[in-house]
Length: 551
Figure 1: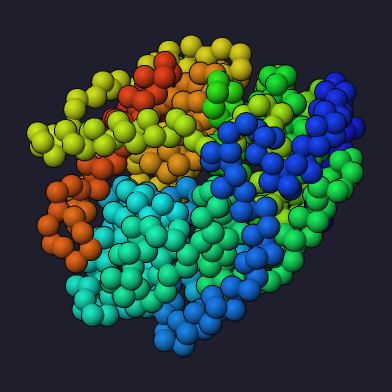
Figure 2: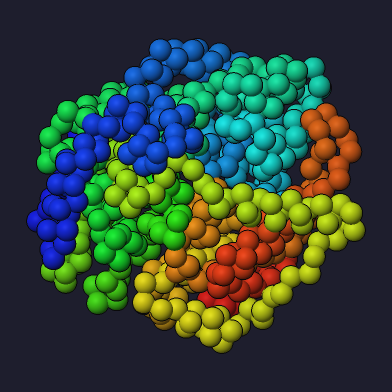
């Protein structure tokens, strides 16, 4: 069971959190959320009343687990070894957590996630897999996510060519909402199975639904135990639990109340084993709170720095496994320096079942404190519209619009980030192939920029971050400095116009660049500060030269 927040670690913000808790109690916020009262957030029920299915999905989904277990056992009996999940955002982040945290010790299929439209990333998966032994999960709530459907069409054609069109459908399952475009396609193409999710669960709250748990079962996670921990957390956070003993109320109060005090950079510090969970929290919090000129930025993946390197805009949240005392001294130093600290302690990795629920409810509570509607994403569509315009331009003219880029030199980058003001943050947006080498270089760059400016830093691969922090980037108060890297594919890959169709009117390289240009323009339209560096095909060399020059 996750420990409740200790108000003693709030330092000068103790009274702020206690006052927020009193306000929650007086307004019956937690009880009303459990009553599915949309007026907690807005008078209008639109995109609220039909987005609360996550509250009890951990109990309702249990009856479906044997069906998924039967599928897993059948696949193993047939010689399948791998699963590739094709998805974005809420459809891919929870499966990625299960793969990275549980995958090494599970007794099931091997799972990887594809959520990059970089041609090299797509090709690397295609070349790695034995298609005859691979199941593909096509996961999209709407059934129309352009990245997911592009992956699907590409791999469906690859499987058809390798194994025959009559055998291709057996290598695919779909997870989607009832009546979606994907459901129609899946039935027409003879998918092995279709999992229709509760339509009243939004993508970022779908970890304990089919979207998260079907992949978890397939790789051998003990999902009944995971759900046992989730339901225990549900009870601990119930509407009739006194708020002083309610972990979600404590965490939501700390997040919301401290954000209102300017401490809106919630910095996650974890045991190494739990680090992958940060990306899931990042999306949940950023997309839920980053709107109406406000936002809580979840800072994940930053290395710990000396305490005097942090500004007064931080809230530190430690998430550690029982027995891991490696962070204790640093967290105590932060507390002594006046930084507020939240402690979350997990018995073992299966307590992540409870953490999924805890963070969902706490984020909803924080939204109430901030007077934010946490279940919509009003600014996400702006980047999609711009990207579609870029694609249409390409299809009409055979080329994408020109983009204003800057020389990738340390002086240019320094001049840009030195515009930063107190309370700002730096976000790296990398439209490049994700690899361990680029991971390390981007992390080093983040460390250098933090040391240079004292600002919080985040990093994300495009277009993945568009489904994660993209809402906050355009919906908050304009505190971001956006450093965008674009690249060219070493070799293009065509996206079929339809599954089984040999015609292709666009490539992955064009789609990726159109998304980069679209988001850049959407950020500029919102008055954000953006700089773009085009690295061409020598991505690693370009990043390494920049990092070495800044050292």
